[in-house]
Length: 129
Image (cartoon, rainbow, N blue to C red; front, side, top):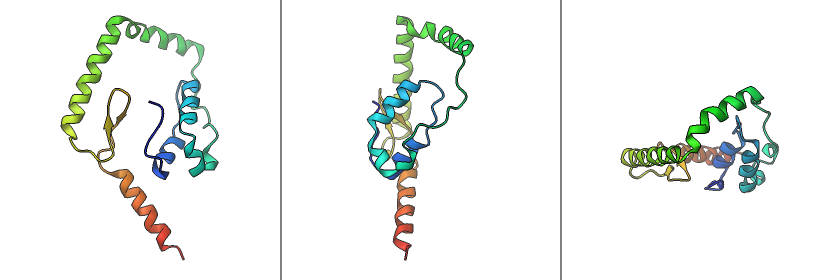
């Protein structure tokens, strides 16, 4: 679930501009799973600056708030919400070109933004002398 596709400049830039708020180890695994992006944007290979590191007090509060969700009832609630959202997104966007909704991925790019950006980029490259 950490590997991104398609392997293009748009996806590489989306990955490079990501600033994790928590989960530095998960972010490192995400970047490792998408090492292909470093070839497209070599200057963006280093980790981003920390965006306000979470202190011990906030970590304790986070663990306390998440505790009920780590129970069997929390797992059932999460499964219910995931199925509800997947049905909703599938009904709203039945044939999306750039979006994906599954247990592992919730990518709501429903307006073909990446296609437009990549086409504009190719047009600019083609217009170069």
